Every structure is written in structure tokens, then in C-alpha cells.
Length: 205
Image 1: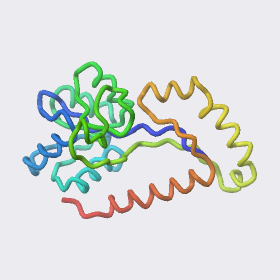
Image 2: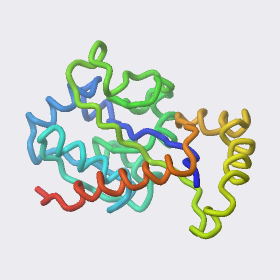
Image 3: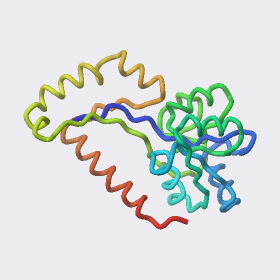
């Protein structure tokens, strides 16, 4: 039916453990320490974990995954210095980044946490645009969607995409709030399934 919000994934480091300030510097650090760097995620199979594996593929680096039972415990251990790096959604990491407890090395969203975008070569140096995000969508049975699409699209727009309070709540957490419904949303979901299938099926290091 519709894409609700898309919080971008971020590479977040403990500044006492990792000196890198940009994504390019973090990549260089990971390449210089193959197999010695651990990264935390919200759990095995989560978008945070997949973002870390995508990072490894794109940068040809060898960093080891440490799964946690949720983003909260991962962020707590990152702040405490028990794990040096976490791949996280901007929604849960923006506050500690703004507070100076953590450093975000790069991200796709506009600079809502005061850090450079991962694709901004002028500020971060050469680095891949990972284009990784957690996204939230609204789904319905096919028979319902086929017969009610115009009304559904209008209701979603009025209650969410065109609703300032709703947009503000998501954007406060660094999320994009795109207007993607109907066939465009179905096409996006199919592309995401194929994209992450390739990441999941790739042999692990």
C-alpha cells in the first residue's frame, strides 16, 4: 500500500575507541585492522546487521558481527566502550551523537545530527554511498488493495504524508517521509527483496 518512513542507517563509533571522523577514515581504519574490529547490531538478520554486511561487501573490509537483542542494548554497550562500532538507524543514535557521546561517520539523510552524509565526498573523502535504511510500510491483503486503492491512497496521504504532526514526529528522528504508494511501493519492495537477497546469499568471511 504505502511507504510510511525511511530512517537511514548510520555507522556510529565510540570516539574513545575509534578515531575516525568520516566514513572514508573509518574505511581506512577497518582496512588497516582486518578481522580485529567488531561491530554491533540490533540482532542477527536485522536491517542493522544487513547494513554491516553490505558495508563489508562494498568496502572489501573484514569486520566481525556482534549481534545484540535490540538496538537499545547495542547502543548502551557502544557508549560504554564494550563494542567500538554499531550499525544503527538514525532514529536511535541521533540523540547520543548530538550529545557528543558517540560519533556518526556518515549517513544518507540530511545532516540532522550534525555529521556528513556518506555520499558527501567534499566533506568525508571518497566513500561508497551505501543507501541503506530501515523502512516501514503499510500493507493489506491483495484483494483489499485492488478494490480500495484510490480511497486508501487518499487516506494515507491525509493521515500521514500530508500531515505536519506525523511528518514532524518522523523527521525529528532523522527519517525521510517519502510519498510512495500503490505500484511504486510494490516496485520498491520487490527491488529491496532482490537487493538484500544478494547480500544474504553472499558467502560470509
